[in-house]
Image 1 (spheres, rainbow, N blue to C red):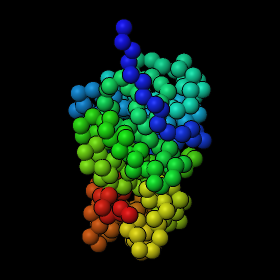
Image 2 (cartoon, helix red, strand yellow):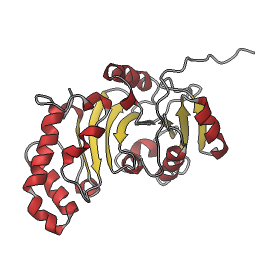
Image 3 (cartoon, rainbow, N blue to C red):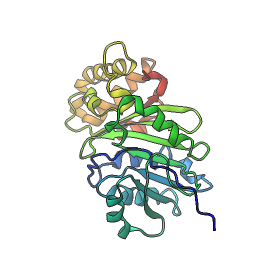
Length: 265
């Protein structure tokens, strides 16, 4: 019998730090603005790429996306075989784990969403686009790679949506508003494609400065709560001409999304 062709694993083992509920912000976005991709998919396959030392983020992703589509299937892919061994006992219908990297060893199936959080952050900037392209080649038509970064407990997160056909299409910032000093505090959690670009003359620097200026300008509104201050900040950003892609329903969550060309290097 002919044997299936094996592909070399593409990637390197990362630190694997993870915590329960760490990725709730991006999961909420996948179950919100991106939900139609999963709902309308011929094959509702979603990948948690580089899930880390604990499989909890893949377990949570399957649970959260089941509200969008009951038959969603999540595959956790990790380059470290020991981590996959630890995860295997948690397998059940709709959730499985396998060894692999950016080549996505899925036996020819094409996922509609690949979530890769806190993975490329640990790579060199020059390695980001080749990794994006490798995943894009394996996505379902219209599918998304979500390349993001967050802090250890998920209070500050950013992610780039990378379309299978178009490449990067948007940047989302999502923040816990309580105790927020200024929006640009998220700069240290920018994805690898942007983190070194937060310097004068770069679009991402201009964007974060605009958010900071609006946050400062709306300080008097903080007496009504941080959420109202954030709503006024993002509304003002849009009034200034920034092409904010979402609306108040998302802003209330501490979230704002702009097109990639507004922040691209």
